[in-house]
Image (cartoon, rainbow, N blue to C red; front, side, top):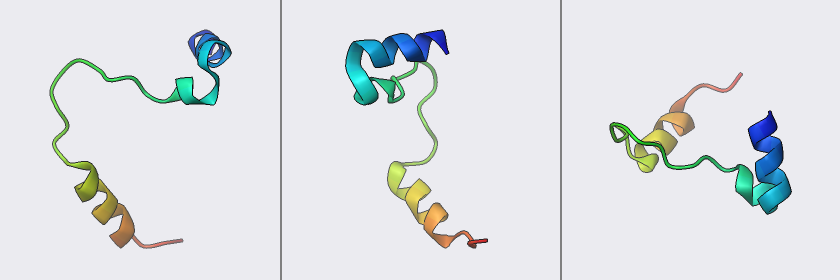
Length: 43
């Protein structure tokens, strides 16, 4: 929480977006993720 609060104080709501992370790249493209989310059943 402390980190989020500091980021919000510094940059507002836009500062709360996720930062790029080191490590292996994502397996799925954002388009593939959106397609799967669109096909999932709604409650």
